[in-house]
Length: 237
Length: 300
Image (cartoon, rainbow over all chains, first blue to last red; front, top):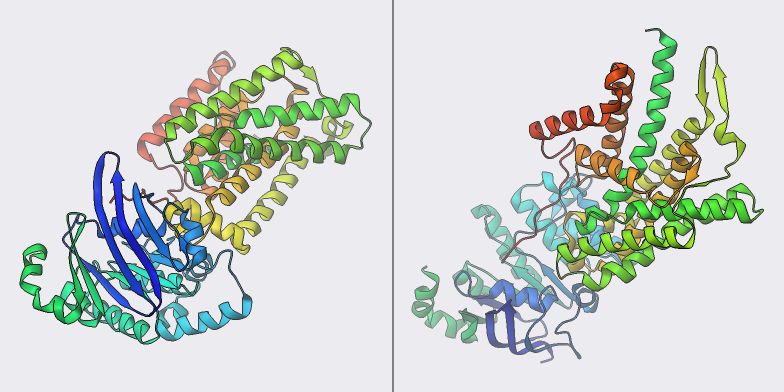
């Protein structure tokens, strides 16, 4: 299998406080990997560091054939990494159309974009209905769909989803999990951070359990499931 | 009060409001993206004003070229000051940027004092700027009509740029949520440079009409418009381009109404009355006329 992402001995600090103490992980082509762990374990920090929002103190982040550690977020995005951030962070005063258009800034190809838009409308029919409305008027679940679509239109080599079901109603949570399963069938490489650990692990190829900024355990879904007691200690669930 | 006075007042207020709207737009373009109140903005206006002066006095270039070069000069000084004085400190602290903007302001002011003169210099503007037209019983300076026309053209142009072009859409995205826009591939350097170029461009246009009002340029000439812009932006809402335009017009209406209705002996305290009104307004509505959609940077 081709390795898409390989993080080695990553150390991230906020000022003098070390948030991540030497995490290593790998993702192969078309894999779906879940990262779980308690609040404050460093999951979001890890994704933000890969995406270039935070500069790591040490370690390497090998993406395809280059080290992207410390690169700017716009450059990391250009290379094919799309982060759908925690809390969605869509642009509220921009229309749905404009939000999506920002997703392909600097890599716009009219024909390809038209195809991708059609594709997004099939995946998320609500975006077609609301195409000319301001993003801020969408419900939480709809905003999450917009955020994911905004990530997908750039045709990323690696899609990172940070807590996509956070704060959503059960119906939307189901829809998001269905969607992730669907994206996996499309062979999209996905790195998923999810509170809903059991459900996420169920659809994943492998999972990493992070505790206090270090990898506590990693393995395939079955191995992870058998460690579920261990996990419940950390996740309280 | 008869109809003519109202009409004359309206047109002149509209002209002043247009000028103030351009001033505050120039400030907000940079503020929206960087959360930086750029104190050097007044000096972009001053710089363009001096270009007008030099080109008018020492060359025989046709007027449209003199104006074009001055405006372009404003855009260039905006672009360069960002490159030299702001980019190196970006991402460290807002305070550093703030201090740097004071430094740019002082350096440009003192350059004008030392290399030209501390005293004001008369600018040689085309005669049309000092002529007036007669509509029935009312007299309107042509300068005012020009200000209104140019402002309308610029506002429409900027509206098209911000609403219809990918770059404008990206800039609006960046001013709402800068890190998220970068995550979508919008280059930070590009949108910030463009914001400074637009800011400097507007300063260049403002310079023409501001120096036309006084007929002269001087090293401190940027301080007046900076203060106007700052207050207008606070009234209108710091996070909204529309708000800054409205703030500019609101400021002009307030200033002209006070000038008109204050008794003569209080007229010299006009600004004090203004500030009382502005402060009262901000106590009632601290977010300004238009709230805007800037979201706080998330921690965690």
